[in-house]
Image 1 (cartoon, rainbow, N blue to C red):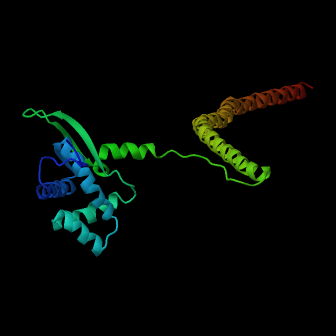
Image 2 (cartoon, rainbow, N blue to C red):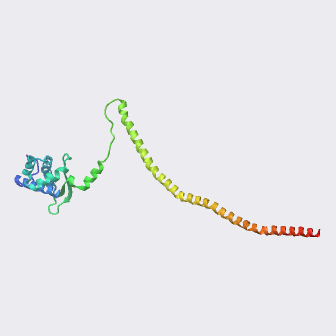
Image 3 (cartoon, rainbow, N blue to C red):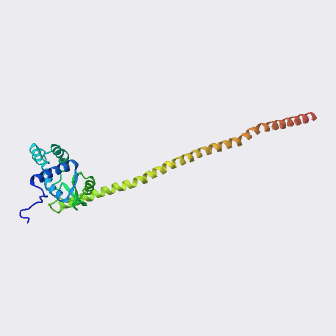
Length: 241
């Protein structure tokens, strides 16, 4: 019969059981996880979690109380320096028990017991899940006071929309600037071509005007010859008379 059996004695005497739990607690604090049977892990959870709660108050009295249970100064130092700062915001539930199957020899249920805050996989998932933000209205007051947060929310949303539109339009403006930059050389080339066109026309006109200037001296001898002929005719007529 189990009269007065309120916890698992684990088949050991009181002194043996306390020494075993103390040794397992020191191993859990130093290594952050241990492999043991499910019955021992459940007994250890009730033994070590009150000590972790006690370590949140770093005082001489707390250290002496914890040392009376662990009897290991290195484990006490590790508990107050490394473990306590990480579990400072957690209100209990410092350990996790994960079942790993049955043992081959006696078919006992085995498990892995670990400190929750030292498992990087689960802690990163929880941190990512707790990043959600919620908008809450301020309580109490008349209808105008309640409408004010709504107006602020709409203004903030409109500001965010304008920011997103400005960000969306920024690439278009950049493309336009690039197009103008690309068109600038073309316009410069056209302007140069226009400037060169009058020069070419002036050269053509100079070429056309050059022969005319050369022909002028050829006409002068003809006029002189005509004048000489007329004079000679007049002289002959005078002689005949």
